[in-house]
Image (tube, rainbow, N blue to C red; front, side, top):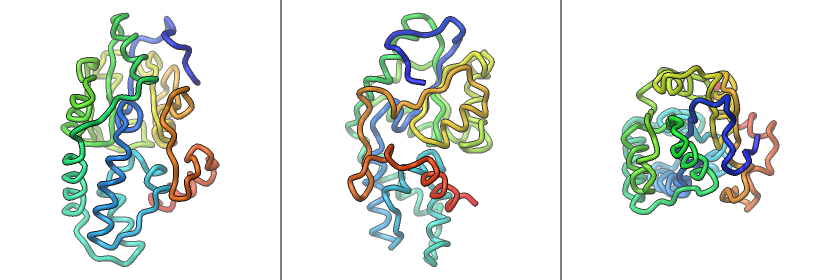
Length: 228
């Protein structure tokens, strides 16, 4: 559901946001870090799959890519390099205004707000600080704060618990199919795909086609290729 500007339903007691690609425009920085890793290792990672798999832990993506492509490497060591490249590029990052305005409205209204990300907590905290919006959030969760990654609902159930509310009292915001599925599984009152919001940055694949123009079936097939 696409929200009306400034309108937070009375039923909503808390807001929960993903971070990368939802609150802050870090996806181009992540993509550049992946490109560096691919050049060093010989791995092939399509831009389409990069966006489709947003929210899946990087270590898992590296492990699956290496297995599929017959490349021997240490996924933990390679992920540490990828994370290093990302953090080096995180000197300037901008918030996504059409999403952040809702968080600001919630803060003005005294509604608690959390971030529930698939990245490490320290990485999320740095991104929020560099973007100048870290003061908006009462709780920040990274992938070390819950058991199973998205599309399992753990991140969003944990976020609601930390805020002291029930999942069915929360409004969740995501920019990926698996994140949206996690919100639905968590039982949130309202779920918003920020990619459909006016003013959201356009994401394109390796052929210049908007990612949102890919069918849900196509994105699901690509996701399953990495996770089953």
